[in-house]
Length: 288
Image (cartoon, rainbow, N blue to C red):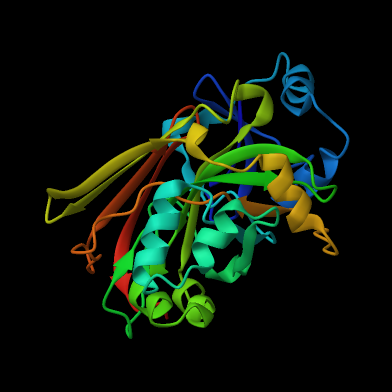
């Protein structure tokens, strides 16, 4: 049971409810993702309620017959860092062992930072960017929490937190430049509603990067390796913050390519999470 943004025989984005690989058009009820997220406030049975409302309805099209768009519209993207041991080690190494990542890994307060405005986010089969002024660029495959305006987790999607490791490694204060630029984030392909995910702490995240049709990197990790509770991450995100349109929170990466690897223009990145789907993107150099 999923929520998607899509086009079908038109350029106007529509909102769909997906079950059994069929898309039901719910745009008349929810003209955008913001409206859907506001409707979910206080509901733990959003998927069931939609199933009941659509009982007897005919689907608009098979899932394979629509073009999926990023499953966000006005939502900001935020991110949590150093939530996996592998991420802690990698970021300590790139920052010349400053110690700050070791400390935040075990601190009560998590690292949470602003990642992207809606216009800097791309969806499935679109292009993600690597910076022109960076030489060491990597994707960061992550589980994204989809959160409504009441800071309740509504569902999950796949996220790619594009990062310039050389820029952040030079000085941790350069993190905003390493993380935030045009096309710096991809999410999709759809939102898996919470009711459809039995245990979000038992999902396998995998990534495959192809260059000229050759596999140049792959890896996988379980979300069970995340040291933070999702509820705690959302709690800190919501402190003194309002998200009237809802928000997405990336939960960190446990897959970090070796120091010898960097993305190149033309690379094809595929990130898969059990029960959610696969996010495909092509890499370009330069975010504008």
